[in-house]
Amino acid sequence: MLSPNIVNISYLFAAVLFIIGLKGLAHPRTAVNGNRLAALGMIVAIVVTLLSGKFEWQYIIIGVVIGTVIGTITALKVKMTAMPEMVGLFNGFGGAASVLVAGSALVAAMQHIATGEASSQMKIATVASGIIGSVTFFGSYVAFGKLAEFLAVRWKLYTWQKIIKYGFSLLVIAGAAWFGVASIETSGLPLSIGLIASGLLIGLLLMSRKDRFPGMDIVKVLSGLVAVALGVLVVMNPENTMLFWVMVGAAGVLGVILTLSIGGADMPVVIALLNSYSGLAAAATGFVINNNVLIIAGSLVGASGVILTKIMCKAMNRSLTNVLFGTMGPTSDTPDADDVYAGKVKATSAEEIAMLFDGVRRVAIVPGYGMAVAQAQHAVRDLATQLEQRGIQVDYAIHPVAGRMPGHMNVLLAEANVEYDKLKEMDEINPTMEQVDIAIVIGANDVVNPVARTDPNSPIAGMPIIDVDKARTVIVIKRSLSPGFAGIPNPLFANDNTLMFFNDGKKAILDIISAIKES
Amino acid sequence: MDSLVMLLTVFVLAIFVGFEVITKVPPTLHTPLMSGSNAISGITIIGALVLAGAIGNSHLTQIMACVAVVFATINVVGGFLVTDRMLKMFKKKD
Image (cartoon, chains in turn green, cyan):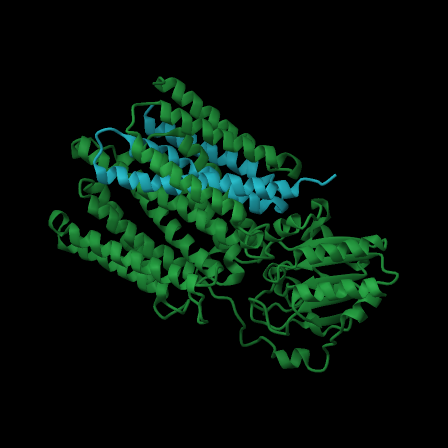
């Protein structure tokens, strides 16, 4: 057994490794080693913990083995396009772990000590960990379900989607019902009803095919207030552990309803926010069990999530309150799509596009979520290679909120072996956009809509955009003229220098490549 | 010094360190940053391990903590592995 001092010094060492590891992420060259240093820090923390006392090993081994198998398989199998779903889900696991640790610490403490002896620090931290963790878990599950397109949608689901959707809902309802009924005698009828009701509400909300309904804001506020009120009761009566679980249930309702109404365009913000919650939940758990390394690691993650949330909000010119409570959509001032497009949209073909590249010096490719959906990143890279062989300079212009999570496009293009120094940030490429001969927009819409600059009444007014309209020629690859997440028409498509190539993203690029090869 | 005050000191200082370090991460690496920091938030695993193995705790506590170990391990193992996979793609090809 290690002495407490050695254990705590090792925890400090682990925390230092986390910080150095995150510092490594400042550059792609040092990032791989940075991540490995952070992983080493985690191993140090785990090994030292296991050497710090006498344990019954069976539950430890079962838990670690199951977790390792699931974690490894998921990490190695997941497609790069599905990264937002995976990160969303993993945030939730962090939250769930925090709730369970706080809950079992509370139960264990109440068995070993008299009620009066539990410190207020432990009680308050348990409440914080339970509420934040539960909001994180259920919010992340909703984010995962919306990204994997099986929650709050009207269309027909695949069988695996139905199994997850209804399976999880029924599990929550049944779990709450069983636990509620089983503990009527020990904790009284009102609390049992509270737990069953919150489980039922979560389950039903998750089965809904709509993402908005009347009275939603009231439920948001009510569930938040109930969770906090129950939290106060937990602090006053920690021996009644059922109170804690009802509080977790109320916080779960809040987590579900906060995330349910958030649309696709705002997903990057929500994932970043949940990321920060999962960190804060871990930090709160650190206060429960008096552990510095949990607090340090948790606050690092919390800070990271807050920074990303701020960047995403700024990139959409919206406040966080507006993302969480507001709506985004066409207003009465929004011009009619027919007026914007009528007679002005020019469609083109792969052959015509191939001819345009003659004598061209600079091309900028602007990817959006459509590229991820069409899995077109490898085709896009091949096109760029073709163009580069002809002496054309090709850059990629990446909008901060392109895709469904921060940095989504960069990962996809890195997967397709695009060198990172060709990925230009919006602020870097915009000033030189006039020198770009051809801008190719693939699967992006709102982030290149010039209305953001020109119309102060538009829902996206003031949002920074990639100024492709300033390039000499713009080629937009898109299935149809349908609007993006903001639901407004895009006058870029009707500009004199814009050509529309109506096609699936991947097929369009492949067609252009073969047309270039033939010419 | 009271242990609560100590812990609060660590908490506040760590947040400042976090802001300093994370602001320097370029947008290109924001997805690996999220998955990597997510793996770090799996640090709750050490609390879960202690509770799952503590001698004298009730079975209910141990089972709850065991589930927490599963969640946290998925977070840690999956998070670091997938981040490694992504970051390797960013390495410059020679």
